[in-house]
Image (cartoon, rainbow, N blue to C red):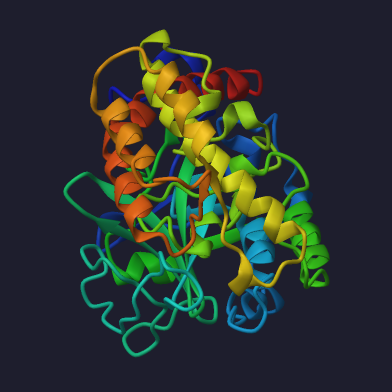
Length: 388
């Protein structure tokens, strides 16, 4: 296996790498499957895992993962909890999903949905994926794992009939690669239908137990009772829809700590690194304020169509005073302030004018989020180094 610039130093933990099993077919070496026991007992972080903590994805889990959210909205939280900390194995490669976020399939369920398509012939380049059985039957009913690519990189997607899960933090556990944080996963990619068919998926038993508890809580609006903001997804548009504030991002048991979650627009303000990004953190506080107001209404059992959120004029005035430069952020905040007129507060939901300005600010925040997520990578490396 080649050592690239993204790996740890070769001599650090080279001996812990899982070596692919091979056999000869027509005098040519062919890589064959390495089981979960090989990965966990011979892999890089073998001191971290207990083989008995995992079980292969089964029919009961597949049923849950394909349950329609239209009338059972709380199921999204159960699905997200289930997949947190899963291990996926292809041949000698194995990845541990540290954090992921789920997106519904239809607009009525999730404004940031993935559109339906039945075309999986071009699995590596298609931007919308559903499990598909017409060409190659997947090993798990209505479940399909794939890589999608765009101009920025490769995204690792776990798809069902009901939703897509985007992996946002992960680490290879068969070989000494660095953790990856953000929407792109380059160290574990699915390049063909055949690879997707051959993948093995293992679920942490504690995640399964948690998922089953969430199933029986129909009025629940979150995965955990703590770190609400860290359960929000990294979205960029449509802030005038309530589903934009779904708390459906989940982390593995190992990394369920706010210091190890990838930053997003709602949590950038909590970053302790980088005094040069103070204006960006000021804008992030606006997203934080909006989300918390939505959460309060949601958790008060207000009917969903009555949730409006609110943003007080005084809060925006205070944010403008915090800005240290005359850049784009203060211009956007001043434009938001102009929306109030004589009002002391404005609604968030169904407020397209406010949404347009919030979307404009996201373009300013994204490069900063990418930069500060480097600190999360460093924290993850430190956390996992103790298990080598």
